[in-house]
Length: 137
Ligand code: NI
Image (tube, rainbow, N blue to C red; front, side):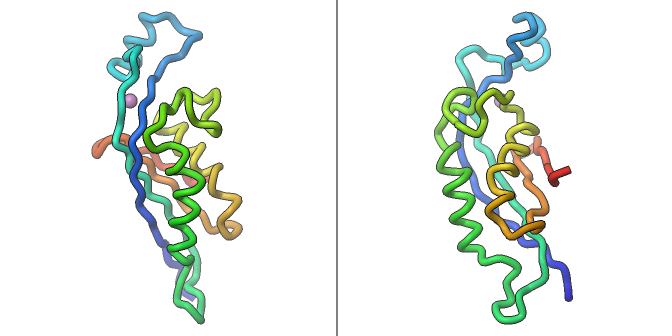
């Protein structure tokens, strides 16, 4: 049977600040630049979630994209959209909200509600130029 990769793309807008309180203000400004702005800043994020599998012989689907849409809305988008990633999101509590760390946290939010072993990748674009990808490794 062919192995097929199916991807759903969603978007959300959120604020954040990259700041490591264990380091000096000077270190944080030098390391994070504009992303260290004390009064936050926003990004228009794009999230691509890919599920892998063999198409079901009856439906032709790897996964019902309606199910994936509902999972991503309930467990990710509704929790992140128009929120402050440092302050407002339960599953990011205590996590530095870099693109890398948010991608891993999103994986952890959805992996257990998808068919076992099917989640292939989470790709989170912070800008059109910068993206982090996590594959559960
Ligand atoms: Ni930023």
